[in-house]
Length: 100
Length: 297
Image (cartoon, rainbow over all chains, first blue to last red; front, side, top):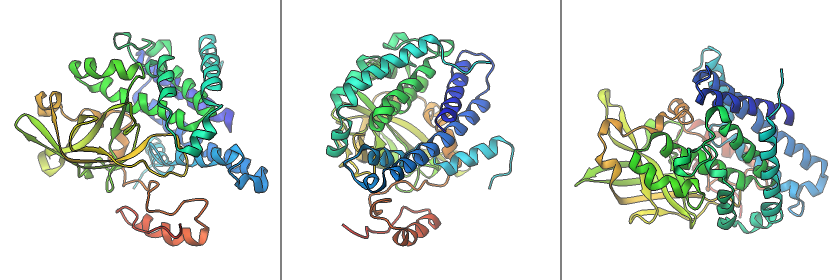
């Protein structure tokens, strides 16, 4: 998940830099790549931290271990700057699928 | 085909990681417990150049735009800072993406000269206020308004969940406001820079959040906040540049987002599935903000 998240994110970043350099990347293609990266990476962060707290068992529920903070901090990633639902809508629209 | 960052980018990653390990990692847990926003460390990130990675040199930035990979560098910096503290990661992301970027991309020359150097240096922060109790996804539903009065804009309204908007080093917020009607009765939404300390502009008490405790997030209120200067001198047709920013545009199509809300019970710890469903169902069905009250504590 981490490797895939990195690849998607840095692909989108490279597309943004190429776009700014006038290297033939379209805004539409960059936005699609960014939406895919945002959706996958943030949901992966929540999944990874959820599994991590589970591995800790009861201690995964206790604030004395950092894993609790990682789990708490991850959740908002699926909400802020365009929720997962919005990203899915944008991706579907970018694929030419009927939305709404 | 290769899927690797350049040697320069990898070297940059090591520099940021060293900084994060030395300056942030040892304190992150305590900042989280204390809900402490470490302005000194934010300014150290600025001194390292992290806020200026995508800004041109004339404003003190790196000048690494485009083929030199400035945006990729920013992503690396956010990953490395976020690796040890998500709060400082979002602080950096918002400082650049929401504070600097709208002014850099769409500001007037005077606005850039006045505001960008201190923001790019990370000495000060700026917030961006779009989301409201009843709007955010749907910028057209913005209720905050700005009326032209004697060469000033008089701003009234409220914003929600605004990052970097109320710290001791916040110098301004850029907010969306309704400034009139366009053809066909659609609202004209403009963006207006409101300096911190403007009478009538209040960054309310910081939110009590599930996470990101060391990130600076406030509701904002505007009661006859008067702003003289740049926006009022610009032709009205040029008053809505920021909502056209690529990162902002999708919101035009959205319903208001269900965000963490102070009146909702804590989503994880206090919210068992049995209490969550009756809380979430009306929230999902309604376009208004959640009206449920806390179930405990």
